[in-house]
Image (cartoon, rainbow over all chains, first blue to last red; front, side, top):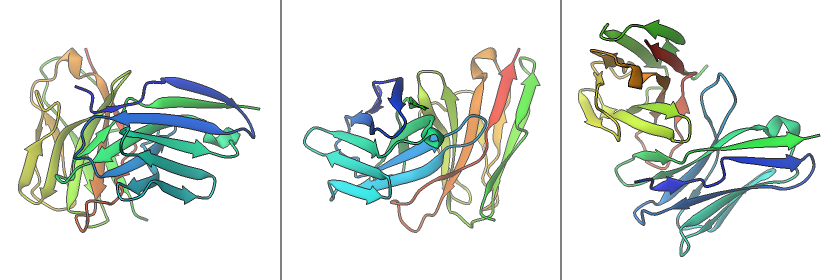
Length: 111
Length: 114
């Protein structure tokens, strides 16, 4: 029972273009969503988050969009840079403070 | 420097030999948790703790134990490891001041059980 799903295991994007990573969730009790970035041999690091009362949050090159009716969120990276190559995890939090993660999407930025 | 420290980083052990992976955080966070990362499954929560002496099961607790005797430490114990516990393990901590806070992760422990 995967409550948070990232259906694309991998994504390849050209440097300078937009990267769009997608995430779907099933539990309507989730009210806070986060994106984490993970490099090899390191732990995940927080990237950006969004509360369910918003539909967009922007931080520099990173923007997260939330569509509550569709139970879908996405992370946009513009412009994509080689250092953005990593595994990206979507996560959702409920009132019990539990963080539920998706399977991850490996993003590769090609020069 | 704010950090979550796990030890060891790498461990190879034999089936049935008890082991402990330590986790320590220096941010005075109330909330700590353990995850395992497996290919195609992402990060799955094993156990979590909302404060000292308060622990609860996550999604995949079978075969694991934890304790929270002090706020900063949250060790993961495998009493009788089995090969299906071969995985990459992460400890994380969060402030309990609000549930809308980011989690900080350790660097991971790669465990192989043969």
